Amino acid sequence: MPNRPSPAQRLADLNNRVQSSQAWNSIFRPGSIFRKGYTDSPRNRSYVIMNSVLYHLHPVKVKRHAVKVSYTLCLGGLSFFLFILLTVTGIFLMFFYRPTAAQAWNDIYTLQTSVTFGLLVRNMHRWAAHLMVLSVFLHMARVFYHGAYKPPREFNWVIGVILLTLTLLLSFTGYLLPWDQLALWAVTVGTNMMGYTPVFGNQVRFALLGGAEIGTDTLLRWYVLHVLMLPFVIVIFMAIHFWRVRKDGGISGPL
Amino acid sequence: MTEIPEHLRKRAEEARKKAAGASSASASGGDAPASSSAPAGSAGADAPQSEAASKIPAHLLERAKKARQKASGDDGGDAGATTTATAPAPAAAATAVAAAAPPMAAGPGGHTQRLLTVVKSGSIQDVKATPQDKVHVWPHLLAVEFVAALLCTAFLLIFSVFVNAPLLTLANTNQTPNPRRPPGTSSASRSC
Image (cartoon, rainbow over all chains, first blue to last red; front, side, top):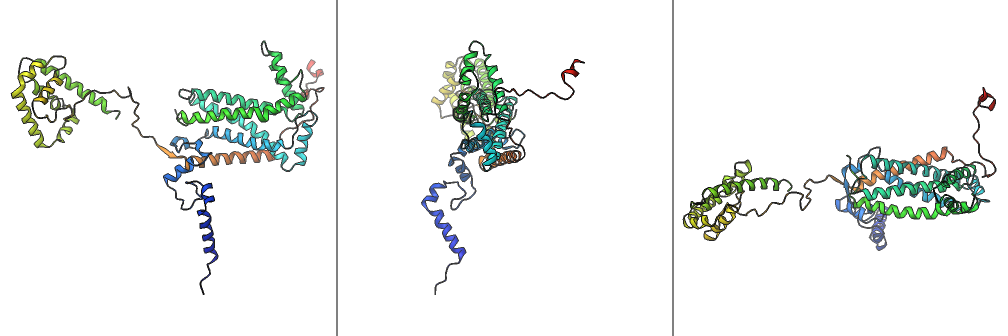
């Protein structure tokens, strides 16, 4: 009578068959730790970067100082990470929010009191937004004090300034959306100040408010800016920013 | 590579100066080729010179010496006549090559190749000789980035659990949120 394979043998056999399948090998590209016969070699380390759509923002190798842990480490990367986090939490919030003066505040209130994790996700969205403004600003300060705005990085510095402006605009447009007293009066002050723009002051204010004063039209306008237009524009500038970091010789070194 | 041209240039300059001096001195004499082929040996006052020369086998040096002697004996007069003050060395060397066996150790460094020109470092190519200290992004950078992202998320999560985002009362355009006066600053106390 032939020996029956032990459960461990069966498991190993199954594992082997799965890892040899075409589906598995087309999902996990060379260099993946999930591939059969993975070893930690320079070749595989390179493949990890080259065969990943996300990781290949990075070069295969970086200068040693780039991985040195310091208090300015990864500020640009964290800004991007916070943007991703804000997108995810923002999409969650969009499921429960209607941008009209009659419904906006109630929706937020209901989100906080009746939706599972609603309050937590709203809190995270709010604080992540503040943190992103802070991290973008600190990133800019790091670049400035390192003199990393100098050639060949002067073009990327300009892109960075545009990104800071877009971040501030995203933060400001998001401020109105809860439609509470804080939102209303903060935006009233902000738009009144913009009304003093020379020559086109009234037109600028009219365009921003979608009318003579703040109302439902303003809310809809700022909502569209906040969830669609500004993110769309910022993503384009981010793509250029990341691409230029690589083109200009990677992360700038210490002075 | 960045250093070699400088040192070669110096050596070649020295050799050229020496050759020019020798040929102008012996323009009327007959031993121009001998002196013009000499810079290789004579320019070597500095250290690397002797090292370069020592690499040539002795029998070859001997053969070159004989050839040089033979050349100077046969065509010394002609070579001297063609030599000018501006370009003495190459012209004389060329004549010597045509007339006799190829001279060994004819170049400034004791090599058989002649130095045509010296390109100053950085003028055409920006050669970076110093190798850079680099590390693989995976795992070194990605691990650091992952930890940074994780810490950021953890901070945000914990902060959001304990601190709520503000939500005041419904927006009311008829009521401005005037700041509350601190105690003791009423209009009556201010008038005092």
